[in-house]
Image (cartoon, rainbow, N blue to C red; front, side):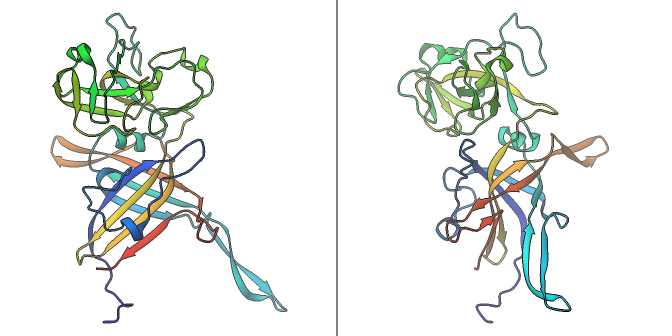
Length: 318
């Protein structure tokens, strides 16, 4: 068999990964398949985060918006060349697991943390007034949060969020990955916990030792800054509507049965639908709910030749 004529890949499932986009500069996380294409699926290169396996993965090039037209010359006019006048690409999938990041990707807008509330807090659909956050002590890391004596307020298994107080900031907010866009401080009613409410910098406590909250996995934003505080999280909530659009760098890997690999790298994917789920009947009274997401690819310029592109498809032979 010629090395340039290889059997078509045979795959079972698609593994999904995401990484942050700098929303202020639109700079994506870069993935180099030549350097990192053979990474172990359970250990993606930093800062990529594993979202697990997904189903019904579809790449859609919208024929109605992706136009390739003929340039005609002569009499009679005959095609002499082609030009691409418009391009549009969409990705659709279903996540097989639920988590903070899968919820954020599929909800389309802000994905909010349900912060533990004050005892007298008025009820609200996205959570009432939050209980006072706990300031971090020096020596905290991405996996160990030094809460000192306040560690007694938490329990092993608690979900927590780590981020700054809201003190009137505008623009994109949230540690590590932007969780929302604030146009005016008046919009958030001076809620001191607003950034922690929308932050994606969440974790779960695996242990508590000598005032340190030990986390199951590193925080998305890495080592917390000295100004960050910790709040306990009861769960997550997202809403139909809103003006904020989630945007991430996306990576989708198809592992071939023959040792080959197909990789789809989307530098900038932006959510294009509101919260949606699909269901699969397991038994007469049981249904398996899956988060469904749809994303539009936004362009980046490839420094190799200046071309504007939406996606990089890589094939790594066995």
